[in-house]
Structure formats: structure tokens, C-alpha cells
Image (cartoon, rainbow, N blue to C red; front, side, top):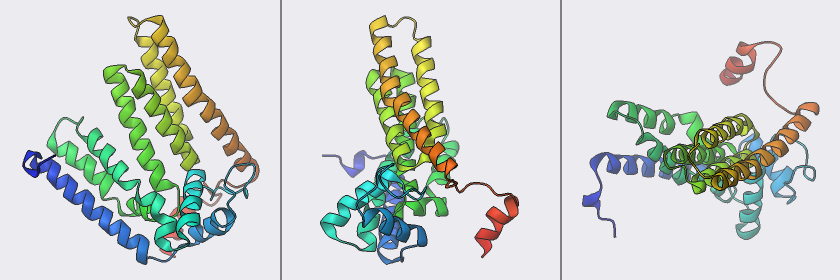
Amino acid sequence: MLQLKNISRPDLVYIIISSLLFIYLVLRAIFFPLVHDEVATFFHYINTGRFLPFDAHWDANNHTLNSFISIVFYNIFGSSELVLRIQNLITFPIYAYFIYLISQKLETKLIRWAFISAFLFAHGFIEFFALTRGYGMSMALLAGAIWHLIRSFETNKGKHFALSLLFIALGQFANLTLVNSAIIIIILLYYKIIISRQEENVKRGFKAMLVFNLGILPLIFFSYVSFIYQNKGLLYYGSNTGFWDITVNTQLW
């Protein structure tokens, strides 16, 4: 069994900070009222039990993985703020774990803690882990995809290829804006296959098939869904009036 005396001081500090943040998010999930988007998610997807694209109500508010897991918890435990948000809460430890692992690849303590601070103390960002939305869990999944991408370059093992692709596929299922991140990860994995010239052709072919089946096929599907949203006018990005009206004023009022 792991003893506290075997944990380094920086690691212990990180565990304490992450635990306190998690407690804060749990309390926020319990006591903070549902916001408009959460209410819309509940009535359009969770309450109806219909969450899959082409079957559910067409709206970018449907973060599909979030809706699916929310439906499961709703049917088991009923409706409450905590129940509807628990699927994002349980992904925060995953997020914190992968942020820690990635930070250990940075060279100096200063850069490492600057990286950790940026990803743990961005208040508006972290609070998505206490909402019935897909953004929090998608960031946890993206962090996992990035970590296994790093490990795939370090070890060249197929399991890291597969896990990186699986994490980013689930991330797109939670948040379609990760389509661009998926494209970058897929390109980098293919690049790793190409530069591994000394590897056997069978292993290279296996990894190429992994990238195609777990990477490109999900990417094609999610891109197609995104284009449907665009054609229906459901992508809520940008404005004809500029940055001030769409971003600054919406935060002031």
C-alpha cells in the first residue's frame, strides 16, 4: 500500500490542490442552480432519453456523451443538480491525473507549476466539471489523448496509439469542437508511423489500421454531423458585429 512518506512534497501538494478543487466542484454541483443550457439539455435529451444524432432534437447543445451518461444516472437516481452533473464531476480526477503526467514532461519546476496553474486555476474553465455540459469531460478526454500521444512517440507501442485515438474519439462525442484536435492527433500519429522505418511492416500496417478505424472513421462521422449543424444554422460561433458585441458585452450583462 502506498505510504504518504513515499510521496514527494510536490506530488503531495498537487494531490492536496486537486482534492480541494474536487471538493469545491462537488459543493458547486450540489448547491448551484441549473443554468439555462443545462435545463435545455435536460428537457431536450435527458428527460426524453433521445441523445443520438439523427434521432434526437437537432441542436449543438447536445453534447452527446454527456447526454448519454446523464440519462443513465437520471434513470437510476432521479433528478437533482448533483445527479445531472455527476458525469462531469467524475471526469475531473481523470483530468487532474493526465495534467499531472503531462506536467512531468516539462523540464523545470517553474514551467511545470506554471503549466499546472494554468490548467487547474482557470476558474471559468474548471467550473465546466460541475455542469451538465460536455466541455469538462471533453477536456479530460483530450488530456488523456495528448498524454498517450506523447507516450506513443516515446515508446512506439500500439496500445498508446489506440488509447490516444480512443480518448480523442470519445472527446469528440462529448464536444464537437475537438474535431480540429483530432485532425492534429491523427496527422501526428501517421507521421510517427512513417518515420518508424526500422519497424516491421506488419506492425506499421496494424498501427495504420488503428489510426484509420479509431481515428479517421469517427472523425468523418463527427465532421459530417458538424456540417449538418452548420447547414441548420446551429453553430453558435462568431458574429457580424465583431468581438466586442459577441464576447465582451455578453460577459458584462
